[in-house]
Image 1 (cartoon, rainbow, N blue to C red):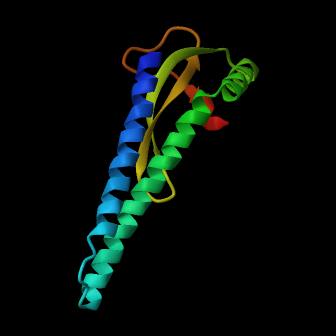
Image 2: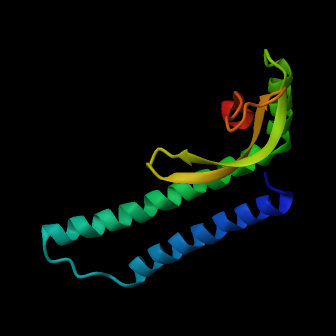
Length: 134
């Protein structure tokens, strides 16, 4: 579970990580590498692709978090939870890692809903991440 300040921190983590990758790409642009063989060209291309893939994944995570925190999606969460066959209770926001199409994982905070009632000791109750379902 996290507070609103945790979400603000998460947002600033994305901003700083995105800026870090952009700086790395800018450094690559400003400092041209002398490529004299096909192997060096492949290595340079791989390095650039890794940076751009990481940047793309961070941007996807940032947009995903913004969508999960939006009022419109919150309303949809509540409607989905009300229509769920079993009664659900919010366990608050938890950090979930989502794998992007580029293969990188990005953390997002999403509300976890579980079935109401007693939980078994040490076991997580059957539940749902409503924001990820939508």
